Length: 465
Image 1: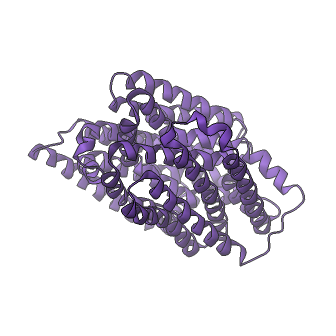
Image 2 (image 1 turned 135 degrees about the vertical axis):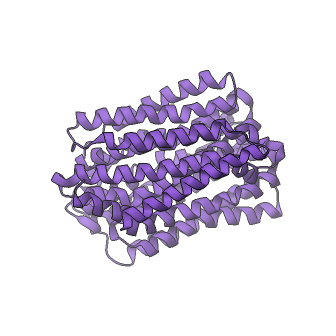
Image 3 (image 1 turned 30 degrees about the horizontal axis):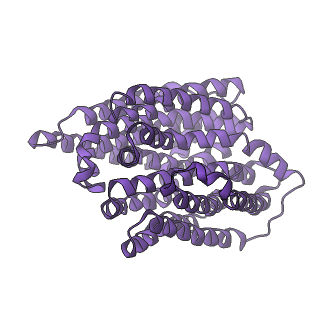
C-alpha cells in the first residue's frame, strides 16, 4: 500500500473521526429514546411510528433531487467550487420545499388510499422529510468547507433534538401523532441552523448551467438512494403485509439494532468520500484500497459485536411484550448486510468520481428487488427470516457496483483487500446468530464481543500511528 493510502486511512479514521462521531453519536443516542417510545406506545401504535419513519426516509430521498450527493462533489471537483455548492444548497432546498408542499396540499386526492390510522402520521412524515433534506444539503456543504464543529452541532440538532422533543410531547399525550409532531419540529429547527451555518460565510454564486448539471447527475441517483433506504424500509412494509402492523414494529426494532453498524459506515462516508475525491487520479485506486480495507475491518468488528450482544441490546430497546429474544437471529442477519455494504460503498466512490452515475438508478433498484424476493420467500416461513432481504440486497449491490465501475471505466483498485475483513465480519455475525441467548452459556457472547472490542482498539492504534 502506498504512503498516500496510509495517509488517507489516517484521514478517514483520524481527523475524519470527528465527522464520524458527529454523525453517528447523535443517531446512536437517538436509539436511547426508542426504549421509552416503545414502552409508552406499545406494539400496535409503535408500528405506526415505524411505518412513518420509513416514509420520512423514502420521501427525503425522493424529494431531494439528489442534491446531497451532488453538493459535495460540486464543491470539490466542479469549476464554481464552494460558491456553486452554496447555490445548489439554496436552490435544492427550495425545490424540495415546493415539491413536498404540493404533495401535502394534494392529500385529499391520495390519503383515502391509506388506512385511517396512518393518514395524519404520513402527512407529518412528509413535512419532516422536507426539513431533513435541508439538513442533508447543509451537511454536504459543511463537509466541503471542512468545518467539523459546525457539522457536529447540526447533526446533534437534527438527529437528537427531534426525537427528544417528540418524547416530551409523547409524555403529554400518548399517540404516534405526538411523537411525529416533535420529530417534524426538531427537523425544522435543524434546517434553520443548517442554512445559517452554511450561508453566513459566503455568497451563493454558481456558474451558468450548474443547476442543470447537478440535476443531470442528481436525478438519476434518486432511484439509487430510495432503493438504499428501502433495503430496510421495504422489509417493514413487507412485514406489515404478511404479519400485521404490530409485527412491523417488532421487525423494525431488529433492523434498527442490526443496522446500527451501518450508521458508523455512513458516518465514516462523510470523511471517506471527500478524501477519495481529492486524491490524485493515479493514486486514487491505492487510496481506496487502503481505506476500504481499514473501514471494512472496523465495520466487521463492530457488526460482530452488535450481533453477539444483541440479546441485551434488544431487551434494552423493547419490553417483554415485543418478545425481543426471538429477534436475535434477525439482528445477526441484518448485521451481515452491513459487513457487505463496504464493498458497495467503495465502488460507488469511484463511480461518482467519474461523473457517470446514471446506471446506479438501474443497478440499485434491481438489487433491491432481488433482496425483497429473498425476504418474501424466506419471510413466509418465519418473521425472523424477513431480515434475509437486507444482506441479499447488499450482496447484489456489491456485485452490481463492481460491474458498473468497470463499465464506466473508473479507476481500478484491488478489491481482494476486502476478503479477509469481510470473512471475519460474517463469521462473527454467524456466531451472534447461533450462540445461546440465556443462562451462563450466553456469557460466551460477552467474551467474544470483548475480543472484537480489543480488535477495534488495535486497528485504531495501527492506523493513527
